[in-house]
Length: 217
Image (cartoon, rainbow, N blue to C red; front, side, top):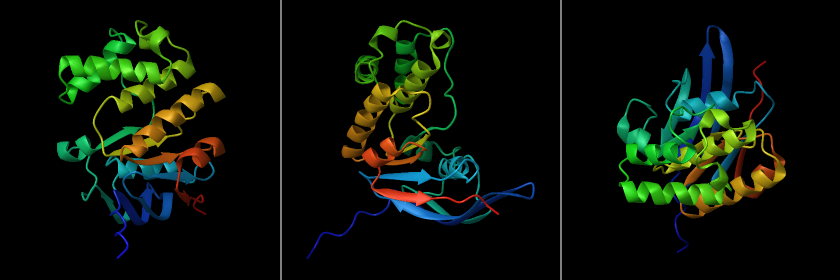
């Protein structure tokens, strides 16, 4: 018998979000299994970021069903939060910590020992060509550098599901290539990735599944 397909890490059906009489997301359905990536595409205002916030447990859907690693998303639930990492908007950074110290702090917050947090942070810096910026402070970075650091901070913690909102923002082709390589490695390790993107290069390189969203009428 052929092997059974993997159960979805993320699934959502007929999800809509209505806020203050504004339809922010209209009937989205889709899913992604572990070790695969789903791209959310569509014009600005189609609801891509709203759907990511629903999956992250930051916004409750008005209608529809959502499951992430078998749980209803709730960002107040530590078990749920441990299964999911998300970069939706700029990450919070400690102004008085260097880039490397911020990475180590995130890893330690989620239980990594000091030596493991240091090694993991240095590996991320190397993979994203951020080693020359390790001792810089976040507020000293260019917009492209800050985007890479935000991605590194998101990857510093444990997760089964990774949500990314336009990770290609402010990245030149070389830096985008680094991000693609790092995300492909995490996907191959078994993470399920959901990303909203306007970059055909990123989507074609990473995503096996796609959901195209249309702006609500």
